[in-house]
Amino acid sequence: MKIIRVFPRRTNATPTDESAFVGYPTMFAEADEVHISVTFSWDLPEAERLKKQWRYIAPVKIGGVATGQHGENFIPGMYLKKGYVITSRGCPNSCWFCDVWKREGQAVRELPITEGWNVLDDNLLACSDAHIKAVFAMLAKQKQRPLFTGGLEAARLKQWHIDELVKLKPSEMFFAYDSQSDREPLYEAGKMLRAAGFKTCHPLRAYVLIGYPGDTIEKAENRLFDCINAGFTPMAMLYHDKSGKRDPAWIKFTWPWARPAIIYAKRKEIEQNNWRPKEEV
Image 1 (cartoon, helix red, strand yellow):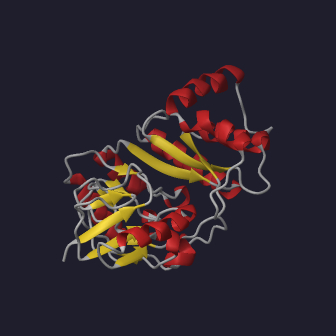
Image 2 (cartoon, rainbow, N blue to C red):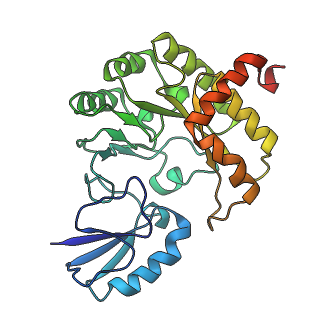
């Protein structure tokens, strides 16, 4: 069966093979089924428009995380570019801003491990030790250095994880500073990782949620500088509601905090001004 996969927008993770399309059909498109994969909730209206166009090619199904559908086993290269890999679904945490635990459940499901180097698991470190070791063993066989862009939970980081990560030499590891409860675990993880030889500028990264209801520019900037102080290069993640609307003021503030070269320069500001987070002042 030939399946065409359709995506409302192109991202870094969008497949690029001949059966992957972004947008509307071409004259020569042929398939037995068309699957429209939607990552962002604000793209759902566009997915419905695409369905009307692609129905003339083959029966159409709309799926993806934006629909709230329960994820199945991961198929490499199907809905994510080759190299991306998901080895588990679900998260035991119930963060208010996250849909993962609502969609996949709080009981982590360990999936069959497939080949890849860019790990996108919801919470890999919440898996069993045996599964994590198996994932690390798979990554050790890849030609590319691994990336952990799905995010590693600092509170679950153990010394044996770090020992294995040292062997893998990942190009980037993303952690998270989404709420105040993440602060202490992030500082502790930073200490452990730097003691193992990892450097602040690379590959230690951290997603920092900003612009959510009740947040302010001052509070967000404090968390971002605090993240640097903990030993991580922050990646500002601007909060979206279901519509995808964003305040222009927050967009302007976020721009430099999503660019590592600019952020590295801010490290000098921390060193020169002996900056300390307000919670410690």
